Image (cartoon, rainbow, N blue to C red; front, top):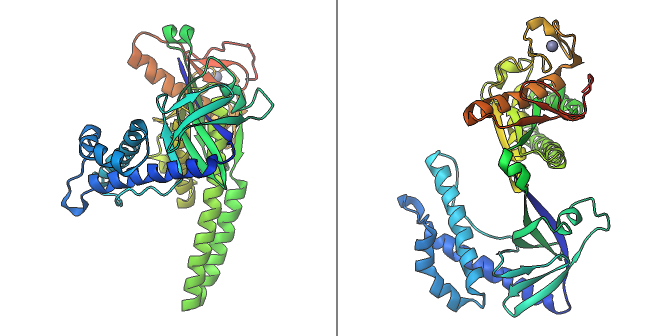
Length: 401
Ligand SMILES: [Zn+2]
């Protein structure tokens, strides 16, 4: 099993280094933007998406134009090609897109352009190598200290960032666990989405939708009042309200997404499992378009935030996840009464959305087990111990879990 983590490390830069680091990220941006212009041919539909081709066409010129090392120039070109590729993908899906531009103060390093140590890093710059110490929180159990000080985590690559005048290293770290690789053990976090509880994880963590529902009501009320006015000023005011509310919803959803990803990372889950959002209107009949929007947005946020942590997000067929008993598998309409679940067969009792979140995790594991055909051990992470694919608890045994 592989554990991929991103450690965000604040750097203590030596005196005088600031200007050199800044010039390095400026020149890196120059490489990426030059490559983007070269690869993106506008409206004729032809774009260069081959790294080798872009390097052949640009490398010599960019080496001449900049003071960057060969490796950094290559990384700048590759970053642009990756972005052009996803732009082309969006074009083929008829989505809005335009030529990628790079404005953030960043540069991408690997082990040839940087030497990673446990307490400092040596970075290639326009002025030779610069060594920067890490500023790490004392608590060895929390990220990034947890990963940086753990010799089992290897530095793979890193992005140098400037934020509010400070320099940070976003380091991709990898730990490979031999014992787990041979068994192919998998642990997943199941997540149920709903109207009252926006999200419930199979670890027993709940994210209430109260705040969201409250804003939604206020928003609709204000919107309704303004619409009755019907004036130009009211129209502008509606747009203002919409923008402000969209911003609030987004911040809220980002926070929930971050917490869901942290929950998965904390419990060493390789996957976060959601129900398939395509037909979610049928499965959550009370959901308004606001909720459907929130579910989709939340999934998108979780998906990309989780990927940064090496955790994959997947969707599964949601059939029966709310009616099925996560303990014995008995499926019946009468098992569920609104928010409470009580199995008619085995008597298992719990919050209905929590029961559903476990079923969502199990659904994915069953699918994987069939696909693997080898019967790889698989678990859903719960608040106490884990639930395996046949619905039995591993450890510790508990009737409440
Ligand atoms: Zn049961």
